[in-house]
Length: 209
Image 1 (cartoon, rainbow, N blue to C red):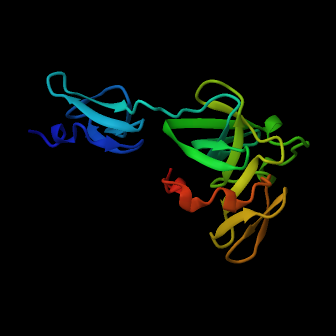
Image 2 (cartoon, rainbow, N blue to C red):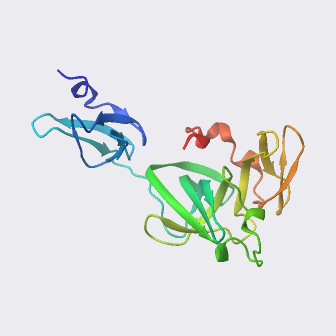
Image 3 (cartoon, rainbow, N blue to C red):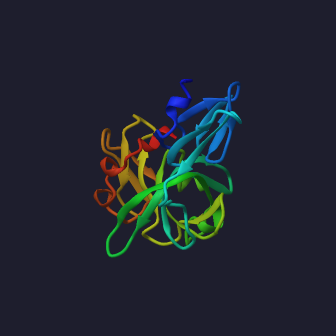
């Protein structure tokens, strides 16, 4: 029995290694990253030795981004007219903010400059930086998803200090403050208190993506 055959039935999460393309072909629920086959969904590994195909069969209850719901994401790129984020999971804002759970796959979102704020945005870097953890509304129906952060409940919840690398938390609707050095930086910050969405409640180390 091969090592990969012994993985059959193993539970995996998005990004976990399930094989290499020199030995197997990627099947449903997987993607190839520099010659390595990784899971793209949460599920169990299934290996077909006769066809040399490895796949990941998702759990029955999938959680995927849905239009008009709120999502938690990590900003991965900031351009002059667009903010790109990796979506982590669903957030419910009523009756109070709470993290509903991680998505069952890898999904991306983008905030066009016109959907960042209700005010005119002159310098996008005054609103978002790479590494910011944001709450956004999903306004489209397919991946990559269009996001909006218009409204006081949407925006940055956490970030990384540009001076010391410490944890930034929202201080006002336009600033975040470092918990280590006290530095204050401009952001489009959410009015949601960080204690409502504590980092310790998230299963992922969300900055690893």
